[in-house]
Image (cartoon, rainbow, N blue to C red; front, side, top):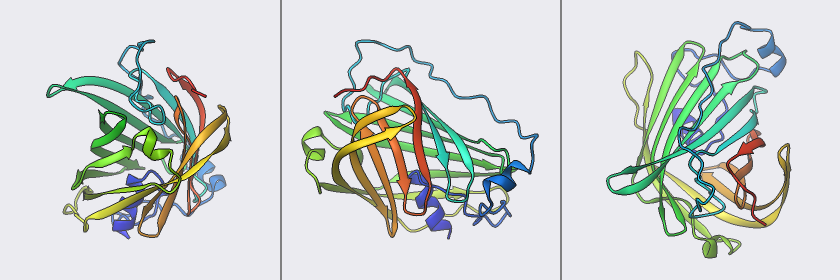
Length: 260
């Protein structure tokens, strides 16, 4: 179960599984029971971008626009019934002579029932129009239990191919990674290497609280786990839903401009 939990966390569809042997609260509770639990939960302050927006900045790929100073906010409804807010900010800096984009995603339990606060830091570089993931670290706090996941890429991790490639319905790509899972009081766990596979499933139109967008649909798979992402040019991810029922919906954004 740990392997499944780690894979799901990485592909952005994590529902709280209750697999932690330290006794994390089981996520198979309803939103109503969440609301009746710890109402004294104080969420951490929201993350904010530190970079200044440049109106002339051009992202290397409009479907994955890493715009320094930008921010996107989502509502997440987990399959367990937990409702959370996600806040995604992007910054950029020179590292080892290349421009590196840092994307910080903060997920906070909105109901207070599970006291969930998760922060994921990812770093990307651009190779022409391709967006490559080079670093990922997850810090997941549920009540008073903290787990971390450190991802180690075994092959080049392309998150978004070139425009010519994603224009082909059925286009596929993949990468392999390992993970180190740490929980206080336990030895680190390193499951077997995992492969994540992507395929383009065409274009369409998607509606969210932030508006209606023309989108590119991409499926991601780890084993039998499936996640469907919908990307809008100039905005990036607007909807994500997984086979087990978790759903992300964009509710507002700043520093990003939709492109027809």
